[in-house]
Each structure stands twice: as structure tokens, then as C-alpha cells.
Image 1 (tube, rainbow, N blue to C red):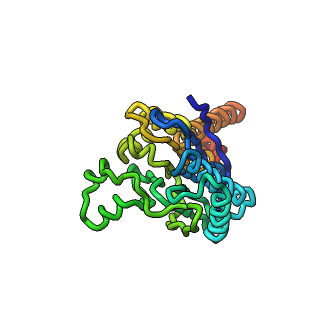
Image 2: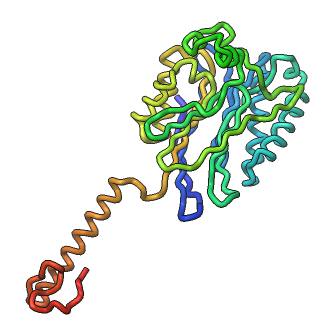
Length: 304
């Protein structure tokens, strides 16, 4: 099994720091011979690409997109403009490979990045294809991105129910991709930043095997991103693993925000104050009054 670990970074934001923790994993699955998925997960960009077409065309397409996006992330300047320039370069990269120029070659590109350029930080999701970004906030899971697929168009038109869509024969047919012939502008969604949020960025190899509620279940059961990502991968493989599977779990919090840690710290501080007060009482030879002042001396200040 893949070796997965949780990484974290403290990001300076107005009013303090934002702690981001994440883990990422990819697997070929049980039925594919090669893994045409690719991913990049490092602050400030977290993105998945699911390649398709030809024997190696999909690998070339997804790897080209991720490498171009990695270069953008390395500059520290991630924005819709820089993302679209990177994808335009990826299109040329794909087209330069003779084995990746057929009509079926391309890749999804789906992810999220943290934009700290304004007065307040916010998230921006990007999407081309049918990989997905989910957000769990206040116990509810929401699919933030909208699939670019034939099935989604049928659902949106009211011609197909979500239940019927799950096993539709056109389930793998997408309507937008980054390919060798043309560049495509991603859809973007802006989101506010909230402590406690959990993002899942994944290829359809996960969503073919797990429902939205299944994804939320494994997030609820596994507070650590690496544990959550591995639990979802294991479940997807157990349910069939019909496609390549890629999962990124990204958590949002603030350093020291754990309420259990806060209570423990406050309790320890309270014990120290109590011990100090008892030592002062013994040294003064007085009993403390209700307000913390030595009895018989109301003018004395409260001791900590």
C-alpha cells in the first residue's frame, strides 16, 4: 500500500495564522494496468488530474497538466490568470507527443487554492471535467464543483435522476477536458475560510465506489488527513476499485485551536495560580478573603 503521511503549514493571515494539514494518495485500482491519475498537494495549491485516451496518452496529459501547475505553485503566485497560462502550456506539451494527439486524449483538472492577495484570505476551487472538490462544513458535505459530463447535463435538464446517473452507460463521457487540440478555462468558485473545514479533492475513481455520505463517514471517523485518505482508498478498493483512485484531504484550522488542549492548558494554569496563592497565604500568615485579598486587609490587591 502507498506510504501516506500528513503534512502541515502555518499560513500568516490577518489576525494570526491559519493552519493547513493535508495528505494525498493515488492508486492504480484493481482493474487498470496503469495509473493515469496525477496530483499535486502543497500549499497553496491542491489539485488532481485524471488522464484519458490511448495507451499512454492519458498519463502524458495528466502529468503535463500537473507539472505546469506545480511550476506555478512554486512561484507562490497562484491565480486564475496563472492557472490558465499553465494549462495553455500543458496543451502544447500534450500536442507535442505523437502518441497523445488522438481525439480521446485529455485530462481533468480539479482542485483548490488559497488566495491571500486581498484583505481577507479565501479559497478558490477550479474545475475542468468530472473530478470533484467536496467541502465538509458544520457536519454537512457539499460537492462544490459541477461535473462537466453528459450525465450531469442530463441530470441538470431533468431527464435523469441522480440515482439513475450513478450507473448510466455514459457515466465516463466528459464534455470538457484539457487536451491536445484546445485549451479550456476552468470553472471557479470562491469560498470563505472557516476553521474546521475539510476538503476532499478526488478523481472519479473514488466517487464511482463511494457515495457522498460514505466520504463524509470516513472523514468523521478519521480526524487525521492521512488516516482519512487511506480509509477512503481502502473502501474504494474493497468496493471494486474499477478505476484509478486519487484522494487529497485538506483540513483547515488554527494552531492551538483544539478545545481539549485549551481546557488542559487552562486547567494547568489554574492549578499554578492556586498553588501560588496558597504559597502567598502561608508566607503572609493570613487567610485569603473571598476576593482573593488577605482577610483583614481589604486594600491589598488580588494576587494571581
